Length: 433
Image (cartoon, rainbow, N blue to C red; front, side, top):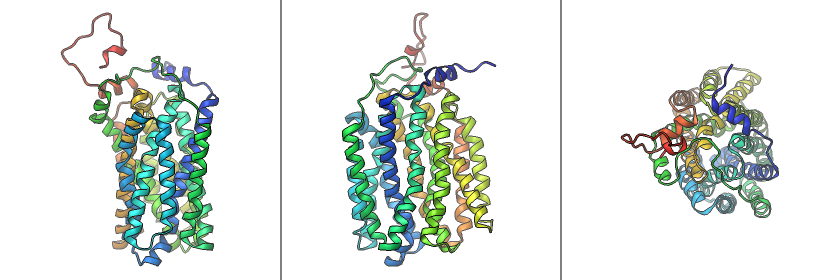
């Protein structure tokens, strides 16, 4: 059986990560873990915050959405900043800003103040993902890129595991404010480690897949319809992930009668499964040469079925099992959604491209908590969970409607010159303008 050329190239490039790449992955893994602990601690604290400030579910959803509004809006600027000033500098400033506003969250004295703090906190974290992806791209070969990024971004799920284990006991013992003071220092420690040990970038080479020229490429990427289809695919993914992350702790406490610490421990189980799925998805998509359709469509189908039955099971064991399977199915799609753009765009545009796609997921993070909170207030958690199926449908549909191979993606992104015909001596790479 013959494999497509992209698979052969991916197999040829799939060598073990060298020391510099491994150090990069470890440092960015640590930064992303802190990122997720800082942002998800608020989900565990919401019942306490709601009780102190007299907030309903809709207003509690607004606390989460305030973060995601600025976080989403900063995704593309974060990529532009990383491409302009370098990934190391943007990653470093991002860590310092979000750590400061994590601590300030614990000082909030009113609902409006809390919204303002979480908004600025989102700015600090919003410029980080694209810069971190660019940092990985600058220190790995293309065939290793999704595997390395998968390891780094599996930290998202492991951060979701650690957040309840760290924050829940602190909230239970000393209150929700102290939890934000305690975890803010973690970001400063990781910032110091990055200053000391982040390796230098690799020399850039041209022996990779055909890709759009970088000259004029920024405008082409931002205006590309195909890039926005990848963004909408990740929007669908974000509806599922942020919907579950935002409301499962509150659901377990208010509807299932689970204690704060118990809900934290139960929430950690699907998060751990999701972390493994992200790593596996990165490895699998490298083997498939970036053909995301083969993973995203079937995985999102499984996820939708699990979500539909999530609030219909009475057993807590069955609920956690379904939640874990839904989370694993969704997070398996994380790296495949980014695969073709990150493998194909030149290094100078990876920050902008990944920022565009990540914008979709974080825009979903802004919309979903408020929508689900309103559905809970007006109807029930059953209606709120049913809304998440919309995300699976969107992700699956756009997986079928986006290029599966580097040449097709490159041709779709690059500006075309319809009347120009290539000469016999024109190389494949020079045909893409």
